[in-house]
Length: 427
Image 1 (cartoon, one colour):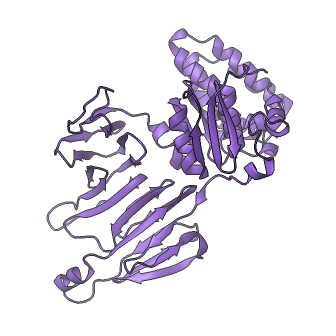
Image 2 (cartoon, rainbow, N blue to C red):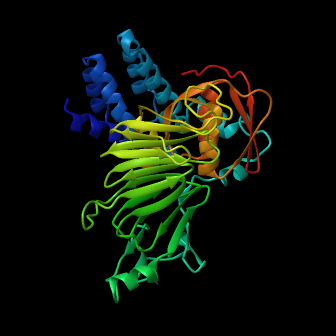
Image 3 (tube, helix red, strand yellow):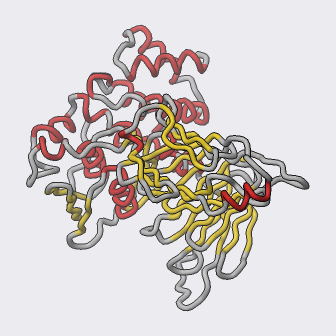
């Protein structure tokens, strides 16, 4: 079976449009695969399944899951970690979608008070996933709520038009400099805009130099409306993914610098992600393409990244070893990155890899605009898997409670997290 054939089957299966013959043919073929091919095929299922989060769009049986889990149990022990990650992910991540199809999890979620004893289903259903929302603050201090304005020109500043495109993203289009270049440079110096996403918001913007930026929830980007000829400099808080346009100056490429929480990332043209939330202990810069230089502002320490690497500037301890560095300057280190995990937010899903409940809840706080309170000791479970960011909050909580010894109580927009032994998942 070729890749296009099984991907087509997955599309049908995820929408419950497959035939019995197609189902049988896939299972027979899957039985013949070696361990590497089998795991690769099921990785592809993850990506397909995350596109179908609604209950009516999912299959009404578990035969495929059961068959594949049995197949994975027979794989070489060298693939144990990946196999276990996949099985958890099927059941509790992409399968967090499956619990909406009418299995036991569906009954627990919608017909019991196991997850939200203090809150009605109607009230918790009002906590919806995030979407494209942001506020643009212009240089004169005025603000534009971008999700409230229609397609077309929003403002013109220093000859640069600001337009909301048909698909919702923001585009800065520079005009021709008027007057003498030196006078134009002086006139446009200090003209900055800021785009800010709230909790449960995200946005995409094309900067005046052609650079594309994706902002995650609860983030901001400050940038000049007209870039300097010698340097392109922006400031980020929260998380942003950059596809930097290459610009040639008079003598060399014009560098692009991202300032974020005690570090500077310098590039000329490349793709990378910066995560610098104030409630996280580290600033993480992950390189996808090209090359970047990461510098610590306080000490001047510099590291260079290759594609697939991540720098970590630990703001709590000074390094990423976990050893206390009280009173010492922060140090940036480099490690191999899990690029898929880093970029999951931009691609529309959460991806957890041996992730603690506190980190997971921080992500949910930003995306669902909720408050979180912990009662008693923090649950020690660690989670691995993925789930679409379009999934409703009750489904995510059910996924977590079924996947570990953690329980949730919801009151308004507050989620109370406690440690509680849950019964094991049953077929």
